[in-house]
Image (cartoon, rainbow over all chains, first blue to last red; front, top):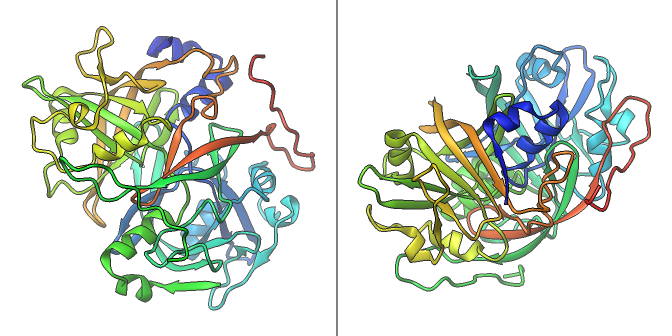
Length: 216
Length: 216
C-alpha cells in the first residue's frame, strides 16, 4: 500500500500535489455554467464541484476558487443573479475542457470551444444546446471559506429541462442513458454505467435491487 | 424536452422530488466515513457529497444534512476530531448502501453491513479494509447553511493510503483501475470508465490527449 503523509503531500511538486488531492476522493460531477455580462456577452465555464444542497426548496451549491484572479462566471452571476447549469456528456467533454482556457473577458467560450448557445424563454442567459439536461438557477448566497479563500455558492434551482426518457416516472435521473460524463482530478473524463438501484436500506433486511427497464 | 418549473418541482411527491433534485446535476462521489465514539464504538456511514476544497493545504469538504435527527458520524467527529474516508468500489456498493439504514447508536455498521474495520497506526479510528483508497482526516471547521440547516464540514487530509498502481507518477488517481463507484440521486450506483485525459487548455490551441498506459 502506498502512503502519503501530510508532509509528503506538502512536499510534492505543485502539479502532482494538485492532481493527487483533487482526485483522491472519487468521481466529480461535471457541468458547464453559462452566464451573461451586463454588456450582453456570453460566458461559459466548466465546473466539477456542484453538490446537492436540498430539494425543498430545490438548491445546489458549488465551490468557487479564490477570486484573486478574474472570475467572469462569478462577476456575471453577482451582477445578473442568473446562470445556467448544463450537463457535460461524452460527446462534448473536450469542448467543456477547452472552456477552461484563459480567455479574455468579452470572448465567448461558446465560440472558442465550439458549443452552441441556446436561449430558452424567458431567460437571456445562455444554455448549452448540446447538453441533455439544463437548469436555470439563481444566485442565492455565498459562504466564504476562510481556510483557503474559496467560496461555497448557494443557488436556487428555478427550472429543469431534460431530454425525454432521461427522467423516469419516479424522478430518477438516468445519467447512463443521458451519456453524462464525470471528472477525475484536473484533467480526466469518465463515462458512467448504471450498476444498480437499491431499495431503501433498513436494519436486519436484505438489500433489494429496484432496477427496472426504465420505462415503468 | 421535459420541463419542470420551480412550482412543478415543489408540487412533486416528496420521494420523486428528492430523487429528481438530488440526481439532476450529475454523478456524485461515494465514500464511507468511519468514526469512533468516546466509548470506543465504531460507526460507518455512506456520504455522496465530498468535494475538493484545496490542495495546499490538503482539504476536503462535505455536506452534512440538518442535525435535527441523530447524526452519529457528526457527533463522533466533533468529540474525537478524527475520521476516515474510504473509497466505495464496485465490490462493496451494496454494503455501503446498507450503512445508511437507521441503526441505533452503539451498533457498528461494519458488522451489520459486512465490512471489515481496519486499524492503521497511529489511528484508533477505523478504516475500511475493502476500500482501495483511504484517507485519515481531521475535522477543521464548519459553515452552517442558513438556507436549509445543512452544514459544510471542512476537514484536513492528514494521510492518504492507496493500493499500489492506483496513484500514477504524476499524481493522477486512476479510479477506473481502482474500480471506484459513483452515485446518482438517492439509490443508484454507477461504475466508471476512463475516456481520456486532456492537456492543459490554452486559447487557440488544439486539445491534446495525454492518456498514457498508466505505467509511465
